[in-house]
Image (cartoon, rainbow, N blue to C red; front, top):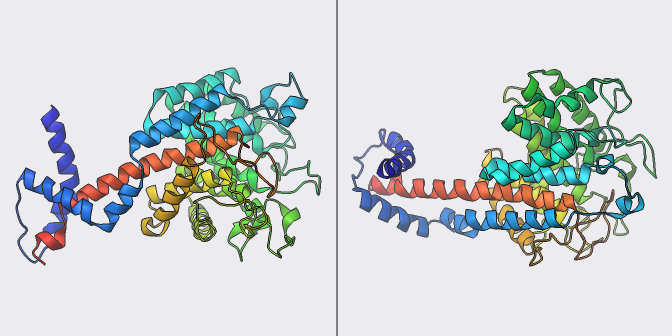
Length: 427
């Protein structure tokens, strides 16, 4: 059985190249198994593509990193200033920080099939009774639903998603059944009832619900939600999003626009997660792809030399310290795009490598993700020890795709090395 598996893996790698060789003008060279693998190893060591693969960490290293970071977060749940000022309040009163963390937990589960991550997500669901929380922002109530749906796809227990379905169908100012623009932020200090970029991170829950239930109306709700927020906040010149409408037209002391890093991270990672579940034939898919690719192209221009992005994407000097929450989202989105064939590997792989290196260099020995901007709505100063659960979530999301990317690139490198058509054809 073991020998059969080895030959099966070899056949899967050699097979596509053998098919391509049928149309070759010159006879191909026949090599024995030892010769093929020896040449493969030599070719992998010599090609530029393999050099990129070597720059990525190995799967065991990535998994060890995410496990350590996750273990630290489990042992050190964050109690921020708001929670400290409201002792005894139900944690689901404002669940979005933890819910973002758990999207990373479930992303690691999906990539590695490490059962402990799945059970961690299911445990949080049971403790939260699979609810959407009590937050007074409709879109933010979708954040925990993303984890409930991921668990549902494995466990197939309708009770896990029923509270979300019921909430969305209940007429209320915070639901699509009760208001046309149910996703606005009405708590703003500067202006009330404004669309905000963070909200789009929850949109993928609607695509997931469409898949789980077969009800395409969830996609209609999601598309209308996304299009309205994008129409209001997307800066066509910059190819990036304002956090909300109050920042449009504002300038920093350096005369630059205010384009918040994490605000764009919410959107960029959110679109990747939408595309994960949006049907390939959905008429709106191309629009999501166009915005995702435009953002990607603009983001790599603004990456710091250390691999990390700064708080203001248009003015890195406004707050020059590194920042990891936005970087985690960007690393995830770029790696996801490469893995799913929607971003060019050669163009975007260096940014993934740099950002993952920057993120891993921003870990404490215990596994705490450092330099994470605290809760806010705009660029602000960040300290080395600053972090939150959503910062950890971004790191886990990035790790889930870097793990996969390293695996795919190694397979591609070995397959290409085994059958270099030009050389074997004597060209």
